[in-house]
Image (tube, one colour):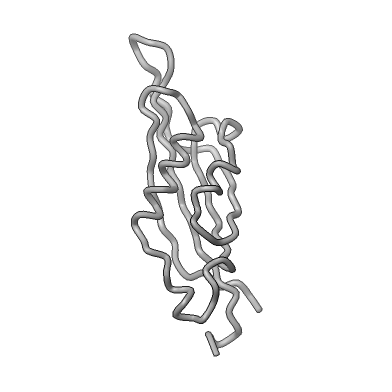
Amino acid sequence: MPLKSMVMEFGSGVDICGGDYTKAAVRALEAALRHNSITFAQAFDVAPESMVVKIVIGVGQPEEVNRKAVAAVLPYGNAEVSVVQGGMEIKRETAPGATILANAALTVFLDLPEGGAQ
C-alpha cells in the first residue's frame, strides 16, 4: 500500500547562549509537535507506531545536529530525519558563542489502501 501524507506541521527552536544545534533542532521539533495532536491514526484503524514521520531540520551547520536525538523526541512512529542548510546563527557581540535558530517541518504518512481505510 502506498504511503499517504496526512499532516504537515512546522516549528522553530532556539538555543540562546549555548550554540547547540541539536538543542535548537529538538526544540523546533517539540514546537511542531505541540501545534498538533497526532491522534488520527486510530480513526483509520492504524497503530500510531506504524506512522512514518519525515522530519526536515534547517540549521546553519547541518553536520552539528544529532539526528538520533531529534528522532527520539517522537512519542511513536518511525522517524526519518534529514538536516539541511537553513535556520539562523547570530554571533554574540560581547561573548563567545552564538544564538542558534532551527526550523523543523514534519510530515506524517500512513500506509493506507487505495481509496482510504476499509
